[in-house]
Length: 63
Length: 270
Image 1: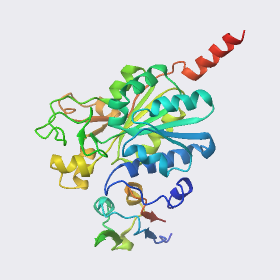
Image 2 (image 1 turned 180 degrees about the vertical axis):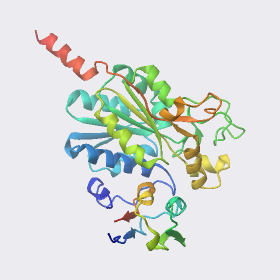
Image 3 (image 1 turned 180 degrees about the horizontal axis):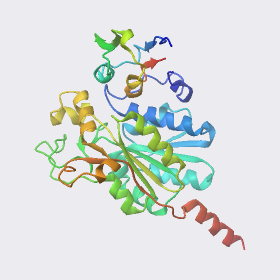
Image 4 (image 1 turned 45 degrees about the horizontal axis):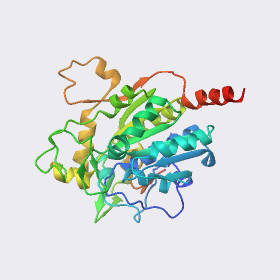
């Protein structure tokens, strides 16, 4: 079965740059770009949803 | 699939006021997921809070909400529950609001076993008012009013709730995000007064003063000190030194206040 690629939406208006998503991503998909989080390596995403669950600012949506 | 939080949040209210890295947002997400799992209706659910950072939570939630006086969440919520016993009443607040200013209301709500759920976000400090020490500030920790270290021992919120008579007591942490919604959902389903303490982080007023270099360090601390109740059974007292138990800590069935009061009304009618 082919893996469907993940789609990570970061709402920059909500992101406060706390680094939680970047630090706790097990496959290092995200990085900080200035003050907000951004996607660095989408292919590595395993859709574990840890970033979405732990984002205190409702700024990440993984689908 | 991304969870649709927007369905339960008042339009235009985000971004919220909490500081970068504050765990209150994680707890709010957990509460929303728990409400979604249980299918609670917006017009049949009241979310009540006192004053404080954590108490800002109901303002974002698209439910029946009450933002009341400092520490008085339990008092107002009791009024809501007595007037409308069929309503799901959820209280939210911080450690200072719940155990100091509202300590009296808290213990008596526990004693009465009134069918409500109290979510206490314990970040060890009064964050909103400038970092004064709270009853949950650990011994030796620094706050704006204990600059040489706090001499007081801290309250164990869970033990306090059990001692006062709460019939469901659970504890989670902001780090263990998946556990939060499960604990809250179980607490809401429990018939009686249920307390869920979520250990939280306050990077702005607590972390800064207590040598935490970042939010990540505070989160990792929560990860390190939390031990699930079942795992703790196999551990020695030495291994449990400095650890905090998480999961469902206490559960019992006991007559609850709203049912008992309905009986009083029946007796008075005769």
